[in-house]
Length: 237
Length: 237
Image 1 (cartoon, each protein chain N blue to C red):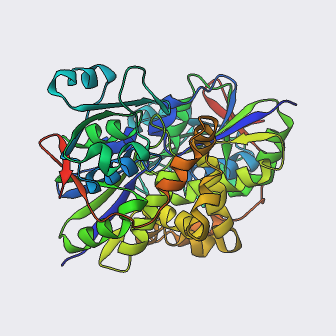
Image 2 (image 1 turned 180 degrees about the horizontal axis):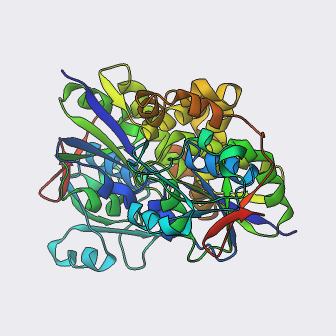
């Protein structure tokens, strides 16, 4: 395989700067959207449909789908659930289709879907599965951090660094943000929980009383499925 | 003094996400625009006028100013000089006014000047002077990395981290990008030259044969002046 590029787009606001037509885009929103998507697909959900707005989500009500809506870390009133991973267990999602809108994660998916070669979903839950897949493909890699309202966040960057860390031993060319993400991951990897505890988002989630969610999202390699976007639906690859 | 915010804007493309009206903005483009500006102001230049385009720069020809234009690391044909710090020595710039346009640095200045409380120029050359000034002011701080064509770059982020590192002992609230910049600076500080050698920009500059410029730009605290933007001109504070 010839040399491939690995780049980290630190927030969805920068996505237009990247040429994605030969890239597999990994969307990253580890607290909590992409962790929950990985868990839900692993647990037998038929599909998860990411939509941009709460209104769009509501429009699916008649289809009999589960509706999930999160804004600013909270479940939107009138919805089945938000993006806590504990809502995506086998008993809740098996053979179901879920329509999901979140503050940052679904925004990131929508920003890249027009031009990317392929979009997959990453989190610590399926880290090795993602890396093994990327290594097997003759494609560039764009790790897209969902961030927080278009700003940089630390936890998504750390996860991007975990991916870079596995790929850099192969035939990849790293950009500056990949180098930075990898270096930050090196500092974080021995105690992900302590490191991510200093992020602003973690502080926000603590106030919401969902520390258990955060802990869960830092479980490494407890799932093997790779959610992939096909016809605007995330399904098991 | 009450708690102040310190934020790092990782590229000029994100500047609209920040509220700057109570912030001192430090513009950072250490390879090489802001290092050269600090050096030129220290060496007695009357003023440095940052302009967005090469054409705008040319328009100042009749005023008898020195004209400096850089694009993609090279001096633009027909100009006195670009942004090598060695063009900003006392003998060349004392009592002169320079009009300057660069690929990234002047873009960053222009992006923030509409709304910022104040804009100053930072580089390793005047690191302590900048930090002492910021500590003395009852204002928020926004460290604006010029990056490379609106993308993240490592060297400007490292310098932002050096500033965060000094300020964090005071009464500041750090955002996620400040935490990341500080952590990257911790890894880089013992050997700035080796660390920045792995950046993509450094590679580009090497190809242009200007490694001496880079080395010079990593000199810490060799100047004391703080360039400040007043009526669209950078002058000594």
